[in-house]
Amino acid sequence: MAKTAFNPEGLPVPRGSYSLVNVAQPGRMVFIAGQTASDHEGKVVGVGDAPAQTRFILGKIQRAVEAAGGTMNDVVALSVFTTDVRHHRDINETRREVLGSKFPTSTMVQVVALARPELLLEINAIAVIS
Image 1: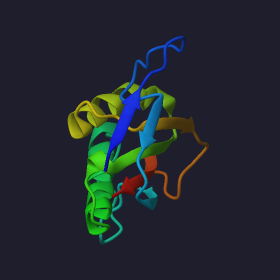
Image 2: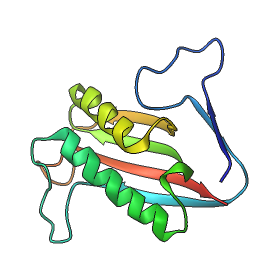
Image 3: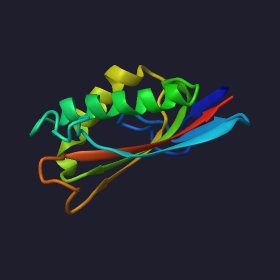
Image 4: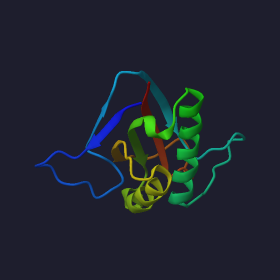
């Protein structure tokens, strides 16, 4: 998929691991439901560890995108829901490790709670696959 990420002049340069704008060429849009750090047995991976949970969740998103015929480079947007925005640095650093330098757009929101108290974040994704 041809994706162009950029940060328009006149807008602040992002400090995190995201781009302000992504333009994707026509393709199949893939919407991936919110993923948490729960494994196949329902056990939470990385209890109390935001980087571990982020890495696990991004791995699940990668498997979902690949099952739809794409790669992580096809992800154009992420929404991150966290129970504590103080984890934002850990989340961003881990995203840099996993995503490299081609960042999707992203929104991070602090929420009161997720489905289980051990979960620190949930991430959903949108990809465009040509």
